[in-house]
Amino acid sequence: MKFIKTLYNKLFLINDTPQKIAIGFGLGVFSGIIPGTGPIAALTLALIFKVNRASALIGSLLTNTWFSIVTFLLSIKLGSAMVGLDWHIVKEGWMAFINQPNWPDLFKIPVLKLILPALIGYFIIALGSGILAYLISLLALRIKGRFNKHP
Image (cartoon, rainbow, N blue to C red; front, side, top):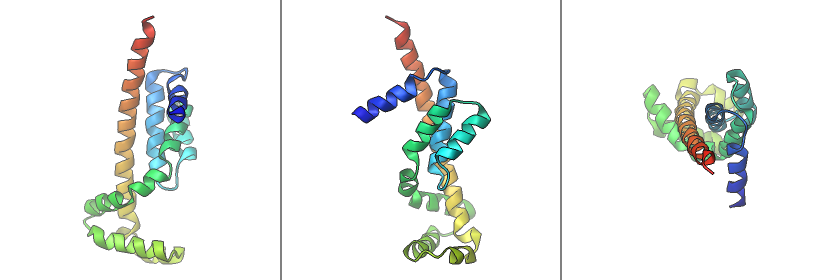
């Protein structure tokens, strides 16, 4: 409960427009889901789009790594469907790599058959999650703004 209260205070008591806070949060969630990106990418995107950096960092930290692990199978399924591959074969390739990681072997496998489906799937999940995070946080900020105007 303390974590939720701290998160609420950090996100909703930022002195910026609700739009900039929500966009920052959405960009943070987006960058946190893409494997290998995270807080640095969130801050970079926030600087590029001139939105709230604190909310971008919070969004990234909330989803960084753990959400990528949770969505791994879904990203393979989505990405495989997008490039027209059997997701079972792509999953088997990734499982073989995970069980015996050898980076040079990963790049011997055609990109289209292993890496590309996962990246496309992660991008789709990250984009959808980022948009959803933006919409929910914008709605929450606007609702909170209405309550703060009344004594």
